[in-house]
Length: 217
Image 1 (cartoon, one colour):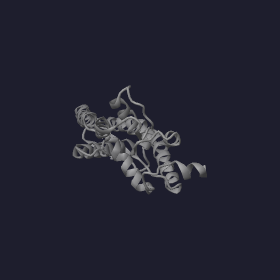
Image 2 (cartoon, helix red, strand yellow):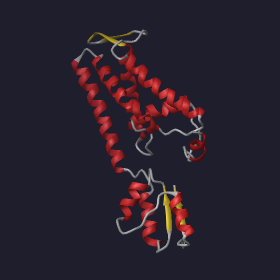
Image 3 (tube, helix red, strand yellow):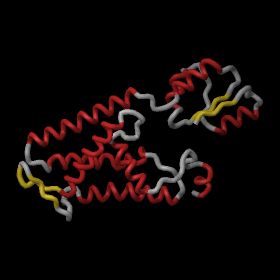
Image 4 (cartoon, helix red, strand yellow):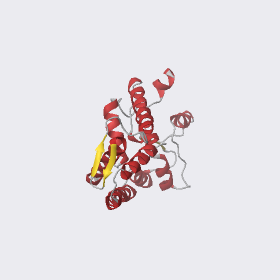
């Protein structure tokens, strides 16, 4: 484990304190991690948090009133404990181990959050209010999904254009196999020879086959 921490892990970032990581994870569920269109994402994040809180503490009295019980509602009590507990445990261990945190690492808690938010909709006794709240959440989610689908999330296009214009036989290019690998490989096509690992670059260097060397990470 010590060797792995020293040679792998997350060299691209610093450790994140647990409460900051928790806030980032909650916001990322709604799409706040994207660079554009964050206004709608924050509105969706607020809606999801409100629905989750209603599921945990709320109980419908009638069509216009909801009681809040600080003892929480048993229908989602343990689900919330498992989801938040898992996320907080991971954040604490990550911070203690000196590794960085990315909101996508919290995806393990997302299915439970979706169920809890669905329970929060049922706290409204009025059917029109239920439908209205559901429509708002769905429309905000669809808007965020369209934004994510149409925005560039990596620099793969820039890398592909640079390689197409300047790459020559014998050049070695190293790029991140996680975020850049799939998209760059798709842009380069089948006619190119690609390396995504440092050990393969050392192999090329040992064979004196390198003309130029470039790294994108």
